[in-house]
Image (cartoon, rainbow, N blue to C red; front, side, top):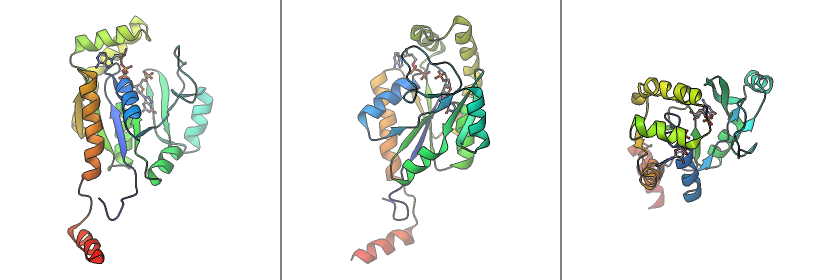
Length: 207
Ligand code: ADP
Ligand code: 5GP
């Protein structure tokens, strides 16, 4: 309960090393909860099975740069040589309508969101080990061997940002990781975000 702000949705930011399982966890979360995913815009090429407007909004570099100039992103970053960004308007509208929104974005983006939305809930998804991470990236089969090495190389740097996050979930067993992230989304709605005076005055009105 939040007497001041009880109709506002919460912003959840999920990040962590590529291949840790963010996308997989998000998919389950969307199926099991009312949380909605923000669809990012990217200049990278679609992978097999990815649909424009569902996985990402696929854009040219020129289109992306125009949207930056128009102030259309909540955050954007260059990740592994491509641009990725969170379109601002849909997120703001959903939060205002009381809908929880999840951003699945890289660490640079998460840090930018933290500057502007310190009330966001920052969740770091970790693989159980580097060996398992390599196995998952290889098993996913969406990157070249060179791209996999680049993503693994980034992982140790990414770990150094852990202290900026509110929660850390190790994605060992998928069901367990999903249950933890789901629990976080529920618990965050029970946080004390109001003063004793506000609470007392609300209850006084109802006596
Ligand atoms: P990310 O979005 O973090 O880059 P993905 O969700 O694409 O990672 O997961 C990377 C690969 O690992 C996928 O092939 C996915 O099916 C697999 N995966 C995800 N979570 C688990 C898990 N808990 N156990 C085993 N494999 C997993
Ligand atoms: P992929 O190419 O594997 O889909 O994503 C590569 C990386 O870009 C992942 O770490 C993913 O979380 C990140 N990413 C996806 N969308 C966004 C976004 O809108 N902003 C930022 N900053 N990163 C994003």
